[in-house]
Image (cartoon, rainbow, N blue to C red; front, top):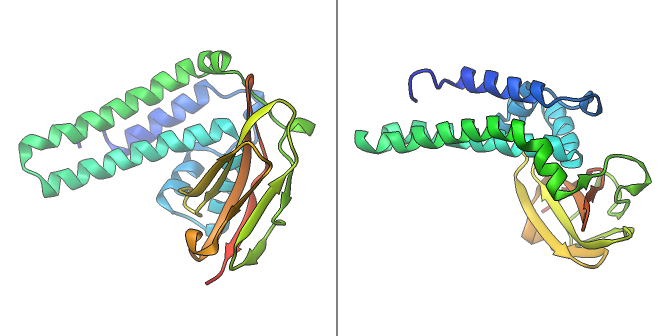
Length: 215
């Protein structure tokens, strides 16, 4: 890693970026350390899953999580490059991490402007996507049929299933209010699923639900 571009400095930069864009509506959002623990699979599983549940339902935290995961991937690739590749190739990894860190700072500054151009993301209230099935904490071997109530003005819906580490295991886009996934397609494990409704003026999200897929 380049001098001065340490893991701790990236953490501090991330924390400053998050602080600079924090507002009262985000008072209940996880801390940068909690999101970092989710990315690195550190700490108690129950705590990580709680952070994941929130990130799936909060557009701001989801973007923060994706950025932090990209930075972590860049750090990991840089470290691997130092072992696997000859020395002249190493700056490519450093450049990647530097670019990601710069993108993070830029995102903090441009976030409000981007949201103004892309439309509002609605929080809370009756405007959120109301999911119907599977029920919370459902389990089975599949296939699983996901259903939700229609949202007026929605052009399409995006169904996502995430692993406990926050990786997307499966996703579907549809103009309907239902989608089906087979158990073998997902694989055994615990997942969190949610639905996003995409509208001309922004998007709305459902709360996350847990789904356990058996063998």
